[in-house]
Length: 251
Image (cartoon, rainbow, N blue to C red; front, side, top):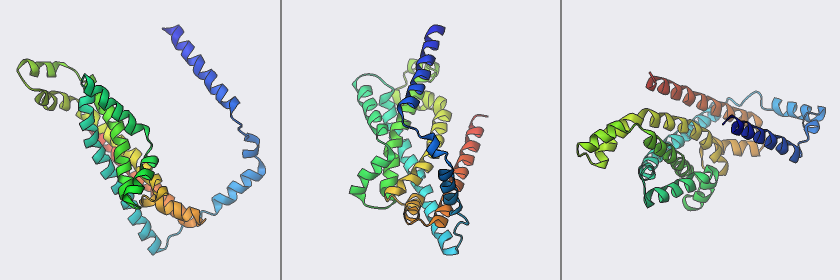
């Protein structure tokens, strides 16, 4: 076992070294005096951020839109993930089929889903919300299915011996044992969806990302700085809330 572990580690180290060697990473140009000076001038152009009441009100509305997109997308993904996780944690052809569906959903990035859905739903938060829901359904479905498979079987077996049906076994044995883990997975994905929702605006899916794309494209750096500050504040708020909920669940 130790020999196999050492061989895997050596292979990973060799892969990393080969990756650096194969890429044309021009560190000297990146860290040169001219490049550092240009980056410094670019960074200075962000300050001070735009703080006019009208712009802050617009940014606040976009922040709420981004928060709503992530929350609704995650909620839809919880239901979709649960619906797919139940057959995916079972056996037979249904397991294979749902596993393939889960793989397909999470293999397509949110940005690609949003670009495809823009053709159907047009610009705005709807395609972004649906894109988050589709991708996250694939992720949560896989995580939920593994949680159900790894749940202790004693309680479920006891209920089966007393004649309980599959739904009753899942509701009263499997679900209570896995619920804290399911909530933890959901909160973690919600954190990720906050960041993803900010990026989805780049393709016209609304929220802070759309404002960021617009102002950055026009080189309006002070406005861009204010939007970035809103993104950071939103992510920090959701991270703190998620941490508090997970801490409460693990007590």
